[in-house]
Length: 351
Image (tube, rainbow, N blue to C red; front, side):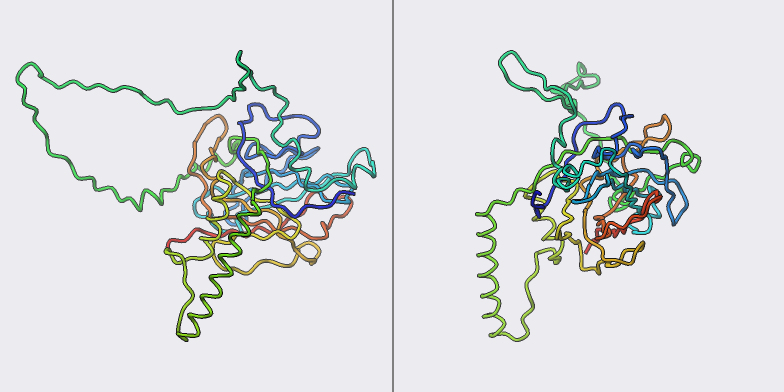
């Protein structure tokens, strides 16, 4: 039996999903947006706050060790601006299916480590150039390499008349707080975010870096004790912006740029934006909860909403970070369709 790793798995946005899979095992795909892949069931939850249909945000296949079940998490978030940054407007559904083959050896070896295996293999061969180099398909922004301008009446004289510049009266803070409303009738349409695959990799933390960080922390604590002895009223120093929680989160994700989520169900620890009390009781069986998954705000830039045949683009969801807590016992009864798991959303605050 393999040893369960306590390393953190990171999710990154991969290529766009052109055609949603209709295969029986589509629920094993890790993805952003699209429609939930569930065998023999099509369920679209509604927001408990506004009662609007809420689209799928992320689908994660996360089997548990020594379980006969396939296990997938479906995380939905309300796009109504009045519901942003509220934990009640997010829904995490845990769904499970008995493995068809019932091979005991296969089930015993199933752990969340498999979430990382072949996660970025979509069955397509990379293109190879004549010189042997591998090319990757990507979308790029077109940039105009040249620009030209003509002066009106340039033959009249060589003098250029400069007109007075109008001072903009735009409220920048208001622009930052812009919220895109979706017409009410659109909530009855086929509402979803543009789908992307999620690729997975282990978090890179070099031992030398950790050792150096521990040494710095040890020196800092020693200096702090000496300073506090000299000055009883000394206050612990904070980062320049005054928030040690945000500094911890930012410095951690900076080591692996581009990550949109963090996964570790085995003794994993979330990165908080600010101090908060964690949920500890499963609403289904009253058992203990485990932190399993954290969704980062870097995901927001990839969320492009589609309603029916209309493409509404981005700007329809805001959040600081979302933490997913699941039942330690993975409680499940025969005949259950799904179980609700706990979502805690923290809003990014301006200090």
